[in-house]
Length: 138
Image (cartoon, rainbow, N blue to C red; front, side, top):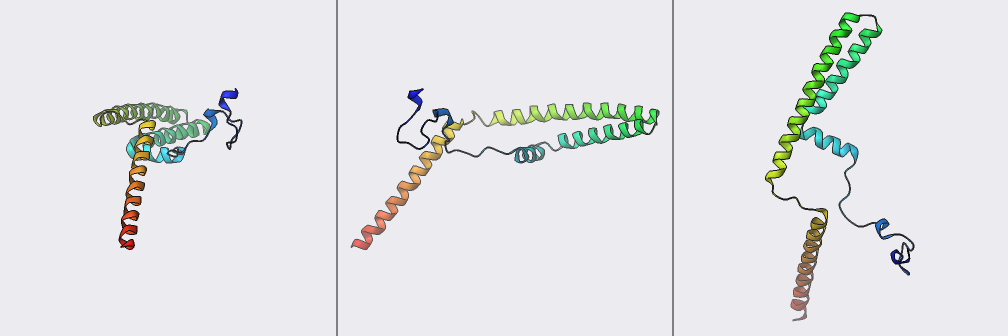
């Protein structure tokens, strides 16, 4: 593994795949959950409804009301089916929407674009600073 080690560089002995590279921060679970919930709000509502009906059915089964528990379980099947249909419909609709935008930008392309934008911004700042310096020199 000598080819992956670099002498005189911080992180000596680390493999190239372990070197941290700058880039966009990954989305946390809660951030993704909220984003997806706002994109397709019927899915979390269906999940909560299914869980509520399931809890009600289990409670009525525990209290000995077998007939009512059976009705709750049938309602749970219905709520679960509706949730799956809404989930599939939302997935297809979001997929179609994403396809309209054309080819997606890869992470490498995004990083290269951001680097070029940073480089252009720095060059513009240097040109502005040089223009200011030349006007002061006159």
